[in-house]
Image 1 (cartoon, rainbow, N blue to C red):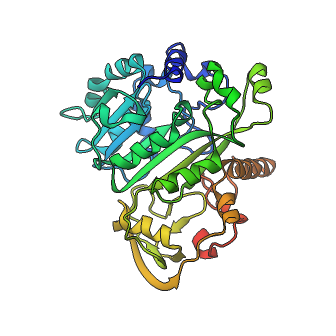
Image 2: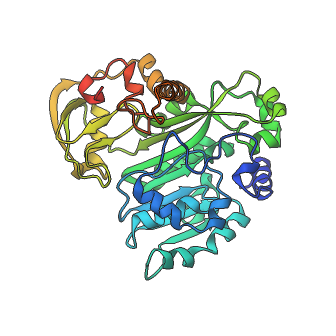
Length: 387
């Protein structure tokens, strides 16, 4: 199903030696706004240097509690994230990386046995397949077979985002999660951008207007996107800056869930047990919700469903109430889901900290931006945000 756009993107990335060859700040090995947890950092240190060299991602796509999970990486590239995930899912888990670029698939396969031995596994738990994210079934990915899907700055390179997200929904098990970072535009990208192979290769022509993401995923049946982290993207090339005009770019890390149709319709009291690995004191669902251990919090119906019907169900006590959930207004929802808004909030906080000599952390702000975004949101209970 290769299109002209697919072929141009393949050629563009085959020509790049490292992420530094890109002409924007999108690619970043470990973004400062979202540092790795200790287990992921240790896994990254064990990944072969040649694999890390050709990393082109724009975020950290390592969600919590992956032990024993089946994970699919959309657009796996050099395989860096796959090998980190390979360590985190354990020998009983499984990781599949899919990429449309034959050269990258072949290169990533060279290190399968290396990492299995490095992690002390009797047999590898990672495979790489060549194929298109828009056609997962053709690549052998079965429906309702995956616990977690990750993707790192790749959807912006695909001409049909709806097809990618639709396929992701199909292959996820009920209660499964899509946890992904991507490049987003401040407005709808003009059609003229899509005729430029460099703008496509850099992700600028294919970047989705962030508000369109919300409508597409909800139409497909996913939960409302939860924004985890964000940062502004700088365009280094003066030529590309001129082409971009008034369009600005940001990277955003979102998590969305495939919830059952019968999920809750009322608000609930949620108490976190402190049992998610490396989250003993609190669990950060996104930039708006941080749950402290043994502190009861009232949440809306969708948050309750996420914590009740996903792999986090054993980590929370969920007590349904009889309070109907009216939901957020569209304006409130737009506010807390904008990667540009969150990126600016995080940057403002870091600047304030630098003036007081603190190393980039403001008060109770966490790396993901939880509590920072909460400071000006309307419609959430204060206890839920832990201000």
